[in-house]
Each structure stands twice: as structure tokens, then as C-alpha cells.
Length: 231
Image (tube, rainbow, N blue to C red; front, side, top):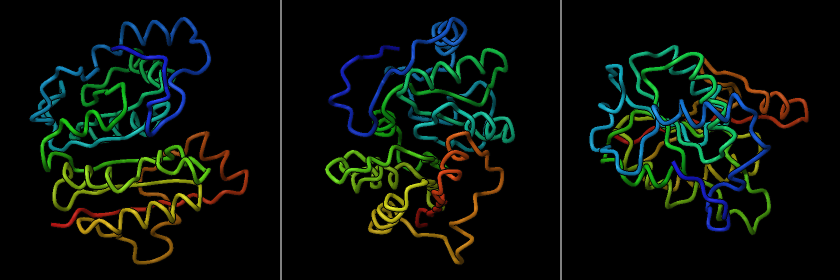
């Protein structure tokens, strides 16, 4: 696991490092995370075999932050293998510290840009992709750094199984509209909403993070957009 300091070539996220890590998360990052890490040389040709526990499905969360959703989902769905991709070192340290306290056999971590993992995965190998509160890159000149580009949506269409789901949540109305337009432009995805409640209310089992609670306090209304990969 190697972390670079130059973020200028990072297409979809900004800072790689945050505040200086305290001793417990720093040790967890060094000692616990490697047991969950999907290395650059790992064989990912059959993702369902990556986990210590037997699983029936495989799910990818892109940019899991502190890991609240990822850990809760893995704990409640032991028959699903969860891969979390996160480049922010402080987020990796946070989830590593929690995994040190409560190990999870149906979880693996990719500590880099999700694209570098997605491009290694075989066709139709994922059941679900989760993209929750990615950086909205609010300035128009930065929109090219938003994860939901046409190129990345095509990547997700390739690795999702027919009938698989792409779940996207954001608290920025502009990014919700941008993401909706971008995903719907891909012929392999269908927006599943049939009523306003389908994008204004979170999905079953949703874990509200401190970030989301802050967004709501500040008057931003989250959108929860679900898309299905065409069969």
C-alpha cells in the first residue's frame, strides 16, 4: 500500500491526506488494513472468491469516506461480499481502526482511485455499485473531475451484471441533475424511479452519516437515485 503526495493528477478526488493521524488509527492503517487490502497484483478475475467468508454476490462502494455505510451493509448482509474503494488516507485509517475492533470476513478494501480496480474487474462481475456523496466539484471548470462522467458510467455498465443496480446519493442539486443526465445517456442504464419518493427518500437500511445530517441542517436536500443495468 503506497500513498503518493502529488494530487495534481487525481481525476476524481482532491486531498489524499487530512489531519495527522492519531496513534490508534495510524497503527490500524499499518497493521490491520493490509489484511483487507486488494493489492495491485491480486487476482480479481473472480471477485466472489476474494473474501474470507463464502458470499453469493459482490458489491462495490466507491469513495466510502469513514466507512459507515460499508461496515453497516457488510454486517447486515453476510452473504454479500463488499469491496470498498477509498483514496483518502484518513478514511482508510478510520475504517481500519473499526475493523481492528470488529473484523469482517465479507469485506475487502482498495486504497486508491476506484477506476484502477474497476478496469481490472471482469465483465458482469458486480451486483451493485454504491456512490454516496462523492465530491460534487461545484465549479463548472471542475466538472470533468466528477466521478459520474460518460466514461466512468460506461465502465460501470461493463462490470455490472444485467439487472444490477447503481445507487447514487448526493446533496447537491446540480450534481443530482448532472448525474441523472449522464447515467440516462448510457443505453445500458434505466432510472428506476416511478414516484418522487423514489429519489427523495433513502433506501431501506440507509445509515445517515454526520455529513448527511450536516447537509440537511444547512438546507440541502439529498437525492437518492437508483439505476438498473439493462438485462
